[in-house]
Length: 395
Ligand code: F3S
Image (tube, rainbow, N blue to C red; front, side):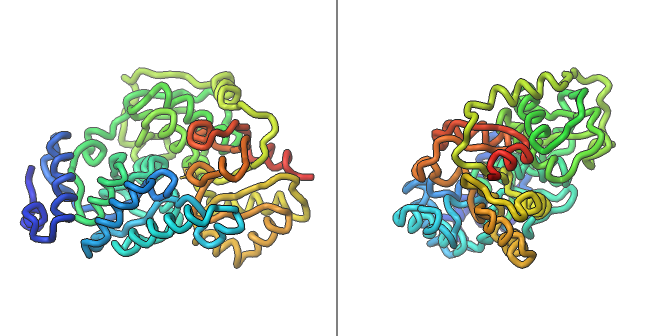
């Protein structure tokens, strides 16, 4: 593989043992996947930030890397942590867990990673542009960056994204190359999509069929940004879709021909089948909106529904710290809290230890959350659209 002088020096240990090991990891990945050269990365997104998923070995690894004194070479954000980093006490997070989680964040910050703690970095300052090369590890954000923005990233793991951030490069294979971004299957959508949850259910159905392929949707009349983030997140959860195209909506779709592709059709019956399959609870004891993390528009919509109302069960809206600060200034947090809900920053229901907080059944509007909650958090799940969930918790 072609390496620059600086990349060779990293590989030879001129920047220390840790950088040598990380560069070696990238070079090895490049060899395995047949990359011809390294590409400069403009942005990275680190996954595996929750202490719940990292555990002690992961924290040890990050402490070792942080001790090397290197700094990231591209703007780098981090995935949600296992708790709200400021309000963890009021959420009942155990002291020991909180202490370990803070150490994870400190180690990443020492490397120059922004303490963004969100799976929607594109809403909070890590917004790449069309055709830039990235190393992102959060699967929903990977789908968004590739599909909605037209940037280029493979679906990295936490270590390879961190290596790319610190070495400033990533091997040029897979979705970094134009020829690998063509669709592999057409999807004819035969029904109206009425909500983000419908987009999410559609994505879940298609991800199971397309697996690691690239779907090209036809028949979607319009889609908001929040609906596109829901669609990609679901496909990345039920399959491992990292890129999708939608006719006349996503930026690369107009460059592509679909006449010769195999196709599947998705109607209301298929979407309803996903709702009923993911539903295992009728009475949630917690309702969470914000998987992927809620946008400002979604926070506004929830606040409007809660104005002058009271909720009878815990209701969380999960988002990033920086959007929470905007919501504070706009008076949205106050409306949600006066109704008895919480605007939770830095974390989500899947990566925080909700099973240890006494919750057994969670209501969500996200097929991705519905997919992971049973195994990660021992939850039964109610999967519905936002309006229905909120109506169900209002007194
Ligand atoms: Fe984000 Fe948690 Fe969903 S990390 S995509 S809110 S499972």
